[in-house]
Structures are given as C-alpha cells and as structure tokens.
Image (cartoon, rainbow, N blue to C red; front, side, top):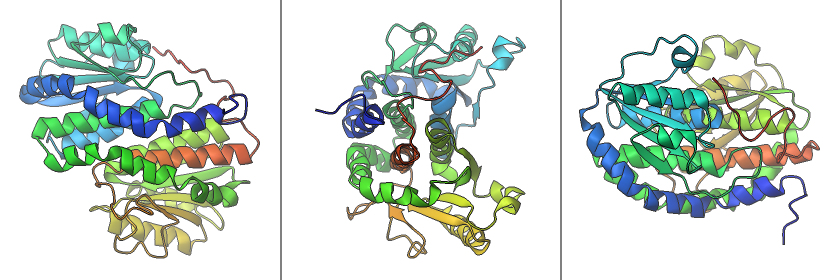
Length: 355
C-alpha cells in the first residue's frame, strides 16, 4: 500500500488514475454534450470562462471549437462582469464555464450573465452541488473522484476530453471520436515511460527559469506544463507559442538555457522544429517531446515520443492530453529531485475563489 505521507504520493496516484478517468468521462458525458451540441448549432460564437489549469484546458477548447467547428471563440475576461460590470453581448453565444471546485465566483458570474441574456450555457466541474452547477443550463460532472494533491492532474485532462468530445459532436468528426475511444491507451503509453521522463529532469535540477514551447492544438499543454513547473518546482517556467517566441523572447536564450518543446505531428511541426534548431544554435538545453516518433524531422530532436513503445501515435487533435500527462510526470519528478513535495505548495490552497 502506498504511503500517502511520502512526497508526491498523492500526485503520482492521481496521475496514474487518468486512463480510467478519461474512459469514464468520454462515456458518461456523451449524452449531455450531444444535447449541448444540438442547441449550439445556432450559436454564432463561443466564450469560455475559467481560471488556472481550467483556463489552460480552455485554450485547447478554443482551438477545437474554432478549428473544427468554425466557431469564433474567446477566453472570457471575468473582471468585466464582476468588477467593471460591463459584460459583453452574449445572446447568440455558447458560453462554457470550467472550474474543478465549481466555486470560482467570477466564472459563475459569467455563466449567470450569459444565461440571463439567453445564451446556451454549459458548466464543466468535478463538484456536484457547487455554485457553478446552478448557473448553467447544462452541467458536465467530471466524476474523477477526490483530487487531493495540490496540483490539478486528472481534472485537467478530463476537462480537455470534455472539450474534445463536444467539438467532435458539433461537427460529427469521426476521426476525433475514434481517437477519444483510444485516449486511455495514449495516456498509458506515457505512464509506461515514467522512468524515461524521470531521467530527463537531471539537467534542470539547478535551473531557475525555463521556456516551454509549442503551437496550435498543443498550446494548452504548453501553458499547463509551465503552470505545473511553477506550482510544484517554484521554477519560473514561461509558456510561449513557437510563433510568438521569435518576436522578442528568443533574445533571452543563452548557453544552457532550459527549453522544453512540444512537437505535435501536424501543420505546426516544421516551424516548431525550425525554432528548436535556433535555440539549440544559441546553446539552449532542449527537451523535445514528440507526439509521433515517426514524424519527419524528429530523429535526433525528440527526447521522448508519446507513442513509445506503441506503434500508434495519438491523433494530432488529441495529443494535448498525453502531452499534459508527460508534463505532469516531469514536474513531479523534478520537484522531488529538488527536495520539494508536489502534493503541497507554498502559499497555495486547493480551492481558489476569485472575483
């Protein structure tokens, strides 16, 4: 039996629960999200309200809703609703609020205002009976069980899976729907490489800063990996779009600067690989995580591939989820090697309520 008092015991357990959690989420959320997709057919745009890790999952949701459903999508600015009291017009919108605890007052206010205006509203949460569940027309309960570690893990990937399922239902995307059926195996492939991931943290043990790079559908994973490194390792890890990085931040790269690059096998791969070469030329220490070890240009660049040792790579539309899991394991092992307990954190609590 695992000793829950050991550093990272809770976080590791919850990371390894994700294959089961994701399988259940895809099965249990389908009926509700089918109804949401039906009602959202007449929506002209979408607004996503979230904070923290849920906001990173919503970045992924934005790419899916815009890229697959062709629905212009904005990440909400909740202070416009709660502090400035200048909420935008939402009548023809699909408005989604995402909160693990369901207690984020500003996310709840966005949903309440959207509902008052007649928008189609959806709440995604893990907490039944929380304020967010009363604020929306439709509710998805993630059903991931109690999450005890400070750093969110299984709730984040479940949120991503909910967004992916909604997008697939909006446009009847058979490729994405099939990939969702295989999501547990994609994540299990990453979990089976835990020792490889643990070995990659060696060069980061004395790092005080790092850059996490990626683009497109995996950008939410870039953001979430950076957040995990901040809250568990107290590392100043900054997420950057591989496109935006050339517009200024590239100048800070110098010898031994730690860089992690998420390399998704889609249209973003060539330009991201080009950036990796540029930061390598400047002396950066690069950890490359590829979605597919067979992708062109990956040889000699990837430190890890999501599909090792499986012959099947995750769909580029769904690789965000296993990328996030790889980032969770990396952050957990780096934290424990640095002498920290990632189940706890300095000055943070599990439930954060913002206005």
